[in-house]
Amino acid sequence: MEKNICSSGKQRQDLAALVSDAFFSEILFDAMSDIVFFVKDLGGHYVVVNQTLVRRCGLREKSALLGRKASDVFPSRLAANYAAQDAMVLSGVKELRDQLELHLYPNRSPGWCLTQKIPLRDRQHKIIGMTGISRDLASPDQRHPVYEKIAAAVAHIHQHYAQPIKMADLVKLTGLSVAQLERNFHKIFSLTPRQMMVKIRLDAASAMLGQAELSITDIALACGYQDHSAFSRVFKATVGMTPSEYRDVIIT
Image (tube, rainbow, N blue to C red; front, side, top):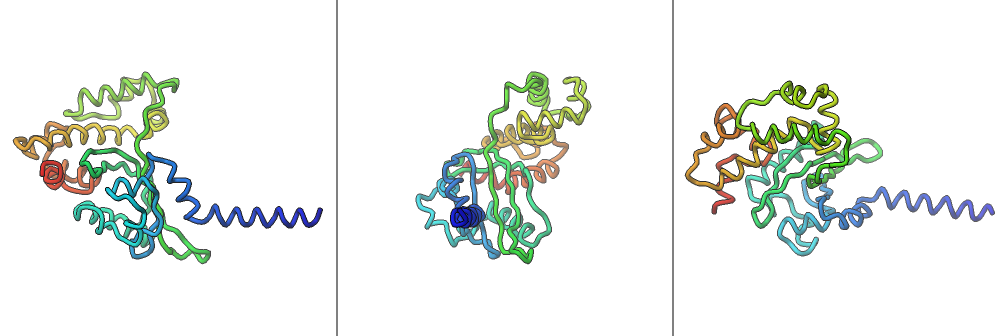
């Protein structure tokens, strides 16, 4: 009996060690086609990646990505943005939590995701690397009790994104309090109301940027931004490149 207890305890320890190992997580995330997963060392080199990240980098094998940095596989403008994010995380200055991002896949099609990046620490609490996931936005939960109210708010944003939209407008439309609106928005769409506004405006903007005859200022105004600089600031924070740089990528 005592031997069985000791054996069981050893199995639990072995399992705990395996679960805490990033390579175990790699196996799990390999099965998730809608999630990008990675671990980087202090130098920003990939040490663990899942198959989804490999595919979205336009590669076939993990070996082609391991040991490399974002600057080796992404366009320079995107790589610079990712490197800046990584530097903040690795220095312990800031973690990324539910960062709404518009990614460009190898075929140049855009895709929305929510990104998390956090530092990895040893037992002395010293940062030894970082890990991150980017999860594709899921379809809304249409079974939620207040789905129709939140969907009406989203429809309102779609119809009026070229104009200023206030939280008070959405509160009045749905009959919910600000707290209820934000909570249910996140439960149904995995986004805050403000993130949804950004997404809808930048969806429209990214489509317009494919039309070379439209100026950046015209696009900014058409998408509800007061001027070129305000639009460019939000666009770069979300996409990782300026509107002009994005246009160069999708048109060339």
